[in-house]
Every structure is written in C-alpha cells, then in structure tokens.
Image (cartoon, rainbow, N blue to C red; front, side):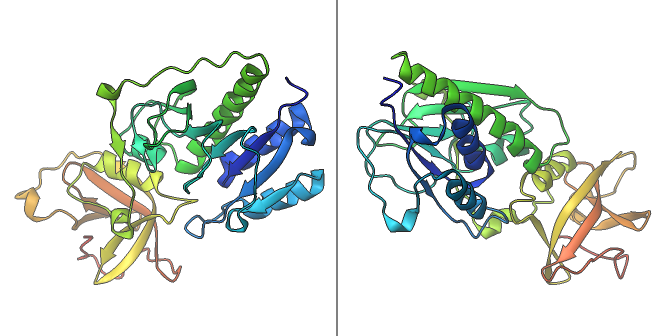
Length: 297
C-alpha cells in the first residue's frame, strides 16, 4: 500500500509548511498528489509564498484554493490550518489545534493560552458533517509554562503536527488506523473572533489580560485598547505586584495609577498591568505617555 499511497495537503500557515517539509523529507515528493494552499490577509505571515517556493523547488504539484484543483476521492487528504469548506470528505483528515473534545471551533490555541492551560495539543480527526465532531485518529500533547507568546506556542504545535501526520501516514500504510468516537459530554466550544474581540477587557484580572496580549500577538493583529478616543495596539505587558489598596477600584479600572521606568501601570479588575510596548494604528510608538492622566478602555 505504501507504494500506491497518495496524499493531498490543504495547508495554511507555519504548521502547514512544517508538515509539507517533513513529509517531503521522509517520503519524497512522489507521495503528493497535490498541495492546495491558501492566503490569509488577517495573518502577518500566512506562509503562502514559502509554500509556493518549496513546491516549485521539489517539483510538487500545487494550486491555490480559488483555482478549485481536482483531487482523487481515493487519496488521503490532510487539512492543516484550513478554514474553508472541503466538499469531498472521503479520507479527509482534519488537524485541530486542541485536545478534543475541548475547544471545538475557531482559534482553539488562542483560547487555550488565554485560559492559561498548561497542556496544549493537536487532534487528528476524520472530517464529519458537523465541525470538529469526527472520530479521533490520534492526539499529541505538550506541556507549556507562562508567559508564552502565541508565535512560540505555534512553533511547539508545528512539531506536534509533524509528529502526528507522519504517525498517521505510517498507520495508513500498515492499515492500522483506529478511530475513536469523541465524548460529546466533555465538549466545549471556542467561537470565531471579530475585530471587537481583540480589544482588552480591563475588568479581567491582570494575569489573564497579560495572557490575552501574548495570545493574540504576532502573527495575529495584536491586542487593542482605546486611549484618548483612539485605538492602540499593545504588544507587551507585565503583571505588577498589586500591593496597594485602591479605593473604589471598580470605578477606576483602566486608569493609570503609576509610571514605572516611563511605562504606565494600569488598574485592572484584579491586579495591575505595566504596559511596556504600545503603538498607534499607524505604527508610531506611544510610550512614554504624553500625560499621566490616561484612561485605557
């Protein structure tokens, strides 16, 4: 079976590129029927140009998703970082950024980091008519500690993706795929995000806001806040020991209480957060603040 096995990759982003490279290094370019890539302008680097160059270098057939490339229904298909409908779900394996059945849906890794999960992972599942409810073929996990930036977490996940896909290909070759149904009673859902969801909720605890800032940074658009009727992007922050008592705290959430080393310290629902890197929407540095009495909202 290994000689006849052909696979199709639907890929986007760094994880998809990593899997493409790993499969090619282990099995050579002959295993690919085609590679279908996508572009995403909402990501600072969607790896589409790297994928194209790689396929051209190794003579791998490739196509953009908008070209509607035809693939064999008998081929095994892997969807990695893919967010678009694939009509032919026969032999279609989805790789999802969570330890299913938790975090079905969208941006599961971002949700896991915001929530402070100490274990993240990838699940390989058969495609089904309802999103992320297919039978589990394999799961890989890794431990993480905080603080951690999303780009670092993505690199860790890319390693899991490679391990997972190579293991599944080997199982396919040996006729050893053993799908396991998910336990729907344990399912949770991570919903899609709009631009409004990238704005910081200052009523949250400072440590969760810190995790939020780290989770939506590069390659994503970054955590946003309103300042003086304008928007700003906060790239980095640090939780400050909350050893002061603030009278009527709920009335002053979002206000600057101190300036440490020219960095503003903002009152959160719980704790304090020092903003150490911030720009306006034009990319201009906003630190140090022009005035002490500044409200973040």
